[in-house]
Each structure stands twice: as structure tokens, then as C-alpha cells.
Image 1 (spheres, rainbow, N blue to C red):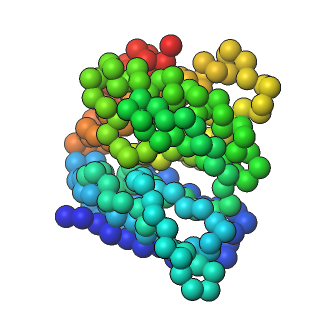
Image 2 (cartoon, rainbow, N blue to C red; image 1 turned 180 degrees about the horizontal axis):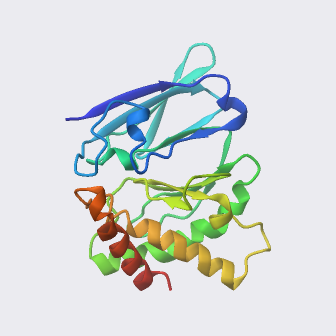
Length: 228
């Protein structure tokens, strides 16, 4: 059963930006759903917002202009996903476009306004790490694109939303000229873990929250094999 949702954005997001974190069971607070890992379904999301703002979700987007300075950002139907890794964000974000990685997956780093240039190292880390994950699993990355969303705050250090991974910005952003070998390694490490979850957690999902150690264990093991 496919779930389709649309969201209309008000004035507040024009200055603050808004993002979701549904792990573990907060998706049910946003929309009716079977918010448990074993229930997976395709999702199709449309966000209506002011034209000068940007919106992001799990899959590739297309834009239709609407009257009164509004637009509709429609996101393509996802693979079957548990509700916990459905995600969307909107606001005055900056976007750093990285080089395609692995099997030509589009890569972007999304940050609050003024910080987009600090996403260069995170984009390059993806170019370096994603092909190793694909080679080790013998499976191409399964989703249409890969965005890394750097947040000014968050309940977790990072969340493996399919195609739209979120991080605290201190984990993935670095000012030009401030990239040290230690910081480079730290960015590669956190990205490797969250990208490993795109296979173990998103593509293949544990049946219950009692078994989340399986997802975390495989991601930790796989990231150790691929981040350096």
C-alpha cells in the first residue's frame, strides 16, 4: 500500500528552516501510519512552499510553480521504507553539489544559509567511501540520490534516512582551510556508518526494535571495512 502525503508550509520556515527526525517512533506524530520497522511501504510526498525556499525528501524532486509566489515540490515514489526513515526538510538552505559517486549517484550537502561552502569535505568523503560500500556488498546504492543534511541541532548525532541522511552540522561541516587529517577521517567515519545503513537498516530492515542491534551491528562492521 502506497502512502502519499502533501504538506503546506507557512511563514515560519522562511527564516528558521524545518526538518524531521522520526526515529524511532515519531512518524506517527506527523501522519497516521504503522510506525514499526517491519511495516514497509512506498512513500510519495509533495511539499507546497514559497518559491524562494528549498525542500528535500527521500527521493528525487520535480517542481511545479503555483500562484501567489508558491511552488509544489513533488518527490518521486520511494522504494518500500519503514516510516522511521521517511524524512523531509524545508527552508532557506544552501546546497553544495558534489561530484557523482559510485554508480553515478547524485551527491549534495545541505546546510543552513551561509554554510553551504563548508560541505565540500563531506561531499568528497562520499565520493571516496560510497564506491567501497558498493564493492564490498556487490550491490549498487539502491536510492535515486544521496543528500547529507547538516542540522544546527538534533536528538541524534546522525540518522540514516534513505537518501536524506541527517547529521549534527559539527560532524560534517568544516570551514575552508580548516580541514585536518583528523577531521577528514572523522567525516569519513560518520558518513561510512550512515551510508552503510542504506543497505542494512533501509534496504534490509530489522523486524522489531528489539532487533535494532542487527542494523547497528552490520552498519558498524561494514563502515569499519570501508572508511579508510
